[in-house]
Image (cartoon, rainbow, N blue to C red; front, side, top):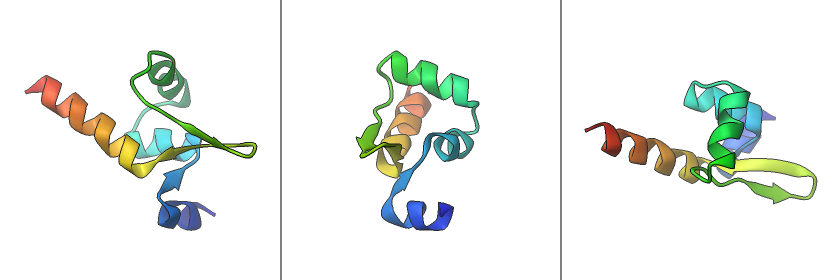
Amino acid sequence: MVTETRERGALRPNEAAAWLGISRDTLERIVQRGELRRAKIGAAVVFSVGELQRYLAEREAESN
């Protein structure tokens, strides 16, 4: 399932947190602050890989 999800360009919350190297709780706090967007497809919540890359790029730019 993980490979299929990544091929579609979306990750479930646990996968997204692991991809970012953070906990699921930290991921939820980032979402609640409006820094990261998620989508709901049916009952599934997903994060696009593009959105995760955007978030990381912004964090990197802020630290430079």
